[in-house]
Length: 276
Image (tube, rainbow, N blue to C red; front, side, top):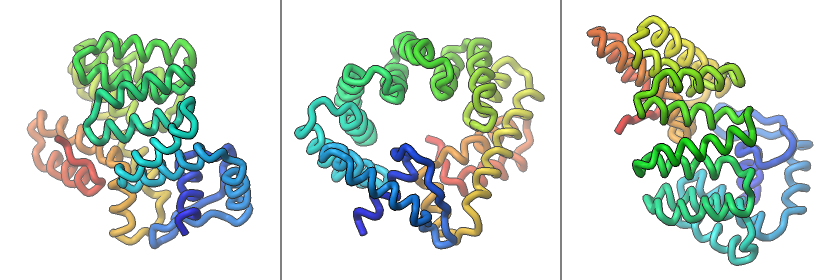
């Protein structure tokens, strides 16, 4: 059963090279067709021991068992000290546990071992920004974009940093680039809405918040007719679905439309987003 769960995580996390046919059942479980399971099982059998441990760690991480994830990642690194994925995964665990120094060290190790592990660059940039080193964070995003001009998340994250640095025009440029690359990536729409708020383009702001919400609701419709408990479990693992509602609610609040704001804040909370 545990091995089956790990194989399912490989499907959901995109660790398999193929795109297996899967769906979420009404009870919140994942159904994968037998042929896809055979492919994933074959990939599992071909993995090295450290790769299997890293995937077991990912399973633990995705289910919130961070101590177990840390243990598995450390075992993977003890077997293969050149495993960039294991260092990156352990860095994520450290970050969840609030140990930013160790997280940053592991991201650096992952980047050194695999320079094209772009998510490690993004995670490092986020730490730098939150530590007050925003220019270094932007340089980190720049490196990723120079290497891969189609890496959507790098534009979106850099746009958010520009926005917080009160450079909305640069932020708008990055968000628009991300949207052109992936029109259905709703975080870029949210960012663009926030950037338009910053320059007092109110109609453009609300238009983008509305588009982001439409995209969220379309994605949520893919979950089918889930029971409330199963849906809550899924939303808890991805609270970002509530972000567009929260920011549109803030916009309505600033405009004095408190009834609309309350509705959006309620929906954001239903979708698992709790603003700190």
